[in-house]
Image: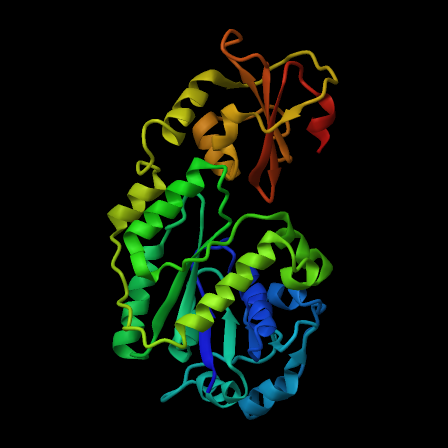
Amino acid sequence: MGKIIAICNQKGGVGKTTTCVNLASSLGILECKVLVIDTDPQSHASLSFGFNLTRLNNPALQNMDFVSVIKNNIKSTNSLNVDLLPFIEDINFFEKSPTISRFKKALQVVSKSYDYVLIDCVPFFVTKNLDILISSNSVIIPVQCDYFALEGLHKFLKTINHIQKNFNPSLEIEGFLLTMFDKRLNLSKSVFNFVKDNFTILVFKTVINRTTSISRAPNYGKTVIEYDVSSRGATDYLLLANEIITNNTKDIIKKEIPKISENVETKFNKKTFLTVDNNNTSLQVLKKLLNPIDDIEQDGHKVKENPHDFSVLVGMHKSEIITKLGDCYKSFYGNVWIYKLKNKKIFKKKFLYLHFKNDVVDHIGTSWFLNDKFLSN
């Protein structure tokens, strides 16, 4: 029987789906037969393999044998040795049963045809995820190298402990996977060190770097392996796949679920884990030096991107920016926010531009004049 691995974290945006599809593709390249199960109604895993958002509309499926339903709806993908079970809207695999869930029984049968079964879980911890973990052999927990990386993690680990004691004693943590790592940022390094210190051997040696190849691949309905096998992103996931295969061929002592208190998590989220000589100090300085822009003249001078002084802001969410720096000029819900520098003697430039992508600071720029063309972005 193939190993069933859930990819789960109740925090959204940490790279669960990205890891699921790219890890599956990498395992396939390394000659493993893989089944990906998409349990998210958004069907992002299916889209990443190039499948459209099609929905089955057959209520009779609910009364059928789940093994037959799964086998009849498995799709072959363009990724070598990888099959996909798309999200099926009109069938509830996770309904309660007095004994064992129909999903678990069906999965035990279907997994015999594969080396690995990877299950893409939904964000937030819902009953569906509980049933998935009960049905799995292990769980991969992606952790984004960003602020609030451990948000809610202590509750999630308590849930895993509860499942081990009451439903699935064999459930293990396959590993904590650090994602979206940017070696240029002190923040990423701080998250890396914090997770390594707290979870030690449970952390994968492989780290997934933040690269354009990983973010672009889904736009073409491809995994990063298909999109650009020579890219850094493809290399990272191939290394991860190799590490998982190696770990599962060794006789490794069962890893205990670590305990992390809410106080430790809160300490991390408040960023008090940072040393006073880097990000924390930088944010305090920025808060004193920046002000939202009022009425000022506009000019069309070019913005220079990625000045070193403000790199601490890259990767922050809009809500964090508001908390740290206050409201911005005009385009509050737009993709570019602008702040005015208070002290002209310290900074050579006059205005700070924050360029957002998916509500997160993607890059930054400064200019002596307010550039009107960015306000319409």
